[in-house]
Amino acid sequence: MTTAAPDSGADPTPSQGKSKHKGVPRTRAGYAWAGLVIAALLGVAVLVFILQNLEQVRVNVFAWDWNLPIGVLVLLSVIAGALFTSLIGGYRLLQLRRAAKKAG
Image 1 (cartoon, helix red, strand yellow):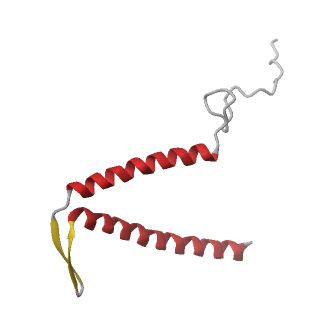
Image 2 (cartoon, helix red, strand yellow; image 1 turned 90 degrees about the horizontal axis):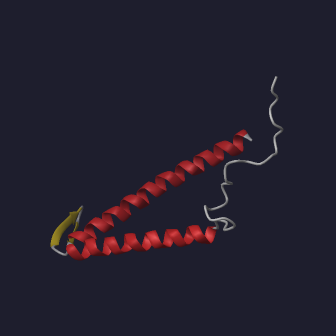
Image 3 (cartoon, helix red, strand yellow; image 1 turned 120 degrees about the horizontal axis):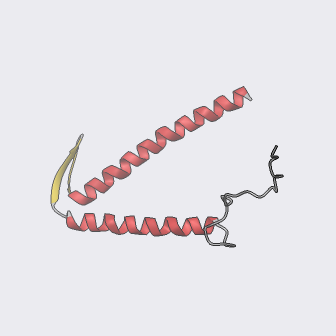
């Protein structure tokens, strides 16, 4: 009859807060740095997109009429969509907080 070896309490998997380099913990500053690098690369890509799409187009929105480069128009459209989505998401979070306060 064999018995199981006593549990030494050691976890065979590395902890989630440690990086793959021994003794170097992951920090918020490290994640912020990675985020800034990614944001800078995306910013350069957007700038290249805008510079490659400088052809003027006529824009008619309700009673307003103006000319904009295509790249700028697409960028403004994306920003407007992101703001609209954020407003809807923020309102939903507000609803959920109110519901949680009532329940708790």
